Image (cartoon, rainbow over all chains, first blue to last red; front, top):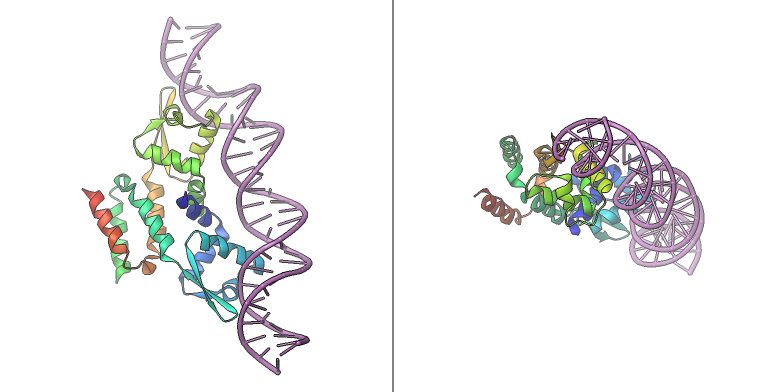
Length: 104
Length: 104
DNA sequence: GAATCTCATAAGTGTGTGCTTATGTGTTTG
DNA sequence: CAAACACATAAGCACACACTTATGAGATTC
């Protein structure tokens, strides 16, 4: 099941934080590590998990590896969420407004 | 971090299946267990995790406990997803169509 | 009110996960 | 080509997690 892999990837707070940081702009692993109390191998392992979940993709640049958000994972989550749309209450209107605002 | 709790809840395949089954209609724990090779305590524990993640809510009915999807959890995921909307590609159009279809 | 039913909790166990240190791989630089 | 650098992989360890059996807590039925 590929969705559970995505959820599993985001279930770890550190990994979630890495993803959020990466969402502010693509970075290499060393830059990501700045400000985070985490070893180099740990970062590498986390990025590997995020990559397998299609939440992140890499691009080799010389001896650096540049990481960026992979839209595939996000779209998969959106697709999963869409299946349960029938359960969304009126509150969904607030979210729609939020989405519209972020479109600007 | 409350989002990681939701993701952690959905990271387990069994729990994910329970949620999906519950999305087809509210049920008590015994009905949920039908067709699933899982012990009664295991089901109870899974439901407890889903409840803490606000993905599911309970309603006592006599000696039965009726479970149903809690929209709160879904809305929280939608909110998390919305933060990364900038990364959604053209493919988002296909999803929008899907969402529109499910509105009918 | 005793038996039965639905569900929750307790306690114990094997497996998975996230971390560490140590080392390997590939690239750039002097 | 040797040293330095960025990153990946290996191996080992502590802890979390999903499961089991056993038992407890409430509610219904006879």
